[in-house]
Image 1 (cartoon, helix red, strand yellow):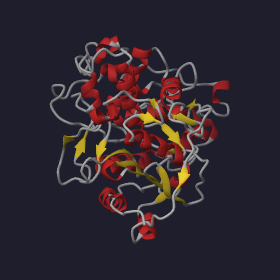
Image 2: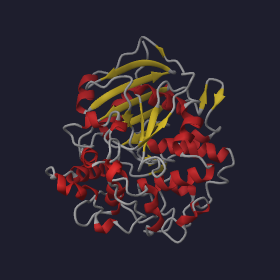
Image 3: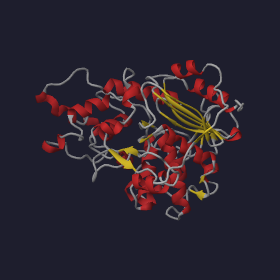
Image 4: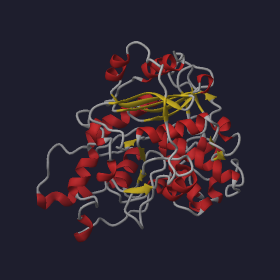
Length: 421
């Protein structure tokens, strides 16, 4: 499932890139929203004058955004994406949780071949909360932030659990429309928060990015909200139709998480970046600032809940350790008791797939008992193996169409089952 989605998204983004530069007098065309996309969500006016300045989405910036997944450069476009995209900062902890480095662990045979063949930018292994392996490649460094893509969805699930425990959300079985009334009358009307968490909304969207003269809904959302910043990602959920009854079947859709993110912000009364800072990033002891990509400038845009979180390798590892430790950091409970177990209880999908189950915005990766993962487009993984108390983070730059999850799952299982000397 994810392999097909990743390949389709990547290929479509490449196809969307302009074939050649436009002349200055035609640069306004960079702002054009495809006619088929114009009535799907409220649009901001096209910027003019000062709004085309540095760090706003000028024609040059838009062109760069459209090349995000190009295989020739994506190892570099995936890092420090705040230089190109609208974003919201997430402040680091004032008291970073230190890491200890343990000796006596050797990676399973074939690591260099594995790292090369799976397009690794960086990889880290924790055992019992200590770093036993750490590797940076392709000029990526320990202090750079790498995009997590859909690993971001797992963060949203963590924050939903906190809001539930605080009473800001009364029940996972409440309808999302209670917290976002604008959904009333559309495909998300009647969909519960639990169904959003499980990707079982029934909304009429396919995670397929067909651009061109007749773009798909997913392509319209990507181009209009993320590239052009002319609309809010989640607002496309207001008018979307319904494909089937909520809860009927699994349908992976980033729009589900975008709607969930808006529900979370409305329920808490707090923007997502602030929520992440105060309730997660600082309490887990992060050592570096992180950021969410956004769908517009401050005052208009919102953090991209489904795909926009960026952090360092070691701080992604802190998220994994938090999950391994059932939401506890030291003597402080960060996630509610029992929430990690609930969000990583998998509903079965295709047993032949390398990702045969899905929980609350988390995947089963491989078939190791009890193991689970946050997984992002183009090879981003936070893999947690409770039986061996192992956490693995892998940041990658898969090319379009790469189907490498089987290979990754197999090697992760080998790491988890390798004892310390």
